[in-house]
Image (tube, rainbow, N blue to C red; front, side):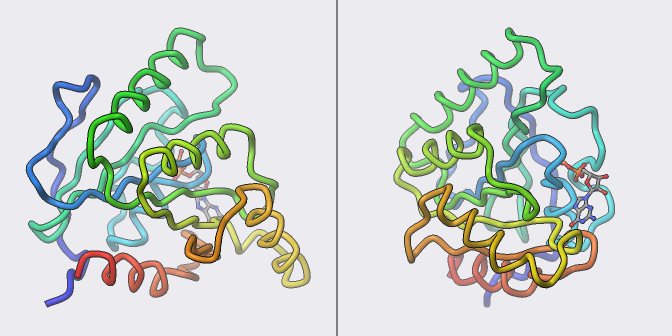
Length: 196
Ligand code: GDP
């Protein structure tokens, strides 16, 4: 039976490599700039109000949160990046944590990179993209906050995101609104297909 993303259970927060989970279950890692709406996208996907804490102080926590979905796969919530007020030491800690995560063999199996549909992806978004590619894992890019765009802006903005991140044909770009629900079924379908 395909995975429904109905049941989500918080498992642990990892702040160092010894704590990374490696138990053979597939791992789907969610990444995005602080405030891009990563928690909101995860909550929308799982029909939860507050699973990944919405509106937590941006960039405050440098840890990787693991949720077990339907008892079968891990949703891995990577720490947000790019928040201007974060100290250099916190930023360095983020870099080290990401390096060790992506250098651990076989982590993750699929990356979901969330960017802001309104803007050209930032240099940090490009770096995150490179982390996924260097880890050799397929990637889905979610362009969130679609509801904040005028209809006439959508096509241009999506093209700019594709171009800036240098997405190839296999890297799907999903227009999304965590607020309104647009894109949810498409993203869910892609994740389900990946989990088969
Ligand atoms: P995170 O830091 O990436 O986890 O971001 P949050 O999920 O906490 O969201 C940051 C802010 O953006 C909150 O005020 C959300 O309500 C808002 N937000 C998130 N997704 C959307 C969206 O699709 N549309 C709109 N209009 N606002 C959104």
